[in-house]
Structure formats: C-alpha cells, structure tokens
Image (tube, rainbow over all chains, first blue to last red; front, side, top):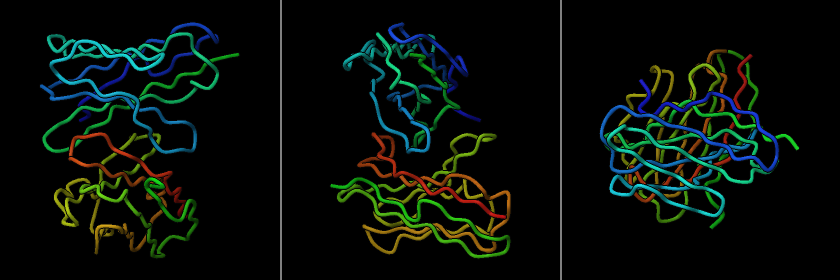
Length: 109
Length: 113
C-alpha cells in the first residue's frame, strides 16, 4: 500500500489562481518531499520538509506539514500555464521513498 | 553533471523478446533506484542499489526481471522474456542517501506488442 495519498486526484484552475494539493500518510516520517512530473518527463524534486518543520517556502511554493494529522499540503500561488503537471508527495518508509498516486494539475490560460 | 541518463528513450519490442534498459546515475550518488510507472499502479519501486550492491528487490514483479550494477556509473534492468503487461515507463533515479532527494532520468517508454 502507498504511504502517501494525494488529494484531490485532479485539479483544474485558471491562470493566476492558487492551487492547493494535500498529502496524507500513515506512519511516522523523517521527511516528506514533493515532486513535479511534466508530461513525458521524469519526476523533478520541488521541496523537502523535515518532521520538525511546520512550513517551508520556495518561490511560489509553500509546503506545510502537520505531523499530528499525518498530512502535508502544497500551495502554488499565482499559478501559470507552465505549472500544469502531476504533483507527487513522497515519504520515507524504512530506507526508501514511497510515492503517492499524485495530483494532476491543469492550469488554464 | 548531465543528470541521470537513461537509454533508450523508447523501446518497442515483441512479446518474448529480451529487453535491456540502461542507466547512468549522477556521479557521486551512492544509491540507484529503478521504478516502473503505469496508469493503473502509479510509480512502483522495483529495486535499489547501494554502492553497486542490490539492497531491496522486493518490488521486482517476477523472475523475468533482473537488474545489475557492475560499477558506480552504470546499471541495467533486463526483462526476459518480455510480455505485453510489462509495457510501462521505466525510470532510473539516483541519490546521496536512501531517503534523500532523488534525481530522475527522463525514463524509457517500453511497449511490448
């Protein structure tokens, strides 16, 4: 079974709007990562947040982590058409990363 | 560094044929991972290596799949014989640690007819 589960499965928004994706996981973690995958490409790392951190920013990305609820969210502000992609969370389980099923984000221009 | 390099980018073969996928990890990364991605099953970890040694191959679907890492700069994933249900995108990734940031190759899209 997957450690991380993203929600929603798909999201369609207008350019300029904010996009929020959520990730829930089952067991305790040391860190949680978010990745982006453009169509036909490999996954690209976006941000890593450690279990003792609550919030992290990188450009237009904001990630929060709530270890009591075993959940994380990825917020993309002022979205652009180029943000259209699949977004995955990944949690460490044992000595490996386990990826969720992903959220497909479509940003309409 | 050019990043993780996979070849070929696309492979079309007939059922029963042997398929070999290749990967060159980022220099200095001690961990190499092979994943398979399908619409139905998402991204699955097949096997990973640490310092060229296979550590966990529990994700390898069956004996038709094998992976080797003869040196720190090269790994192969072999499917023999291939079957239509093996059609998927296969990714290689490398990292400094087992749960550190992973750097993915562009993938090999395999179609078994």
